[in-house]
Image (cartoon, rainbow, N blue to C red; front, side, top):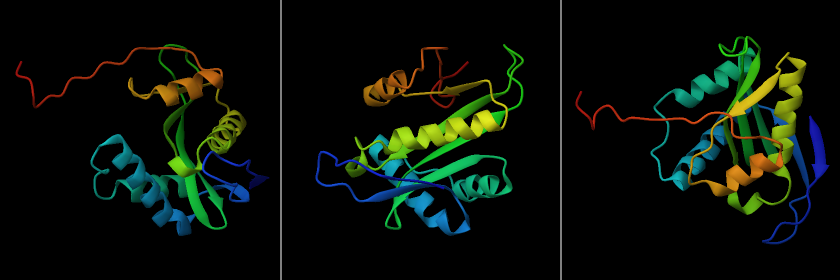
Length: 167
């Protein structure tokens, strides 16, 4: 567990000490609420039924990294990632970050950076050579955050909705 006082944010004083901890079974409801808020802010429906249970179960088995940021038992954010043991292009082990979320009222206080650094240290300890993630094109704040962390554009992704198109 990593503890640190957070600096004041734009909306007022800091909430005090923020802990970054690996999720345990008691954190399932907090992860559900954080994922729900993230999806609402993105304008997307929530994940399919049972999906968050599977993410938490994978984390508890050690098959996935899932850390949560808490201050005074209040969940402020999380990072969800997994190690991929073989990258087809490089032959190396890499870390894939799936989701990072910090509640809007807790942003600009270093919590996202601390979550990311915890994932980085965990990935390095487990043998990862690099880290990859995706950011939505319209999410300029996230793009700027990851660029400040030393990330660079690596690939371009494409998507096609299957139900809207006929072959």
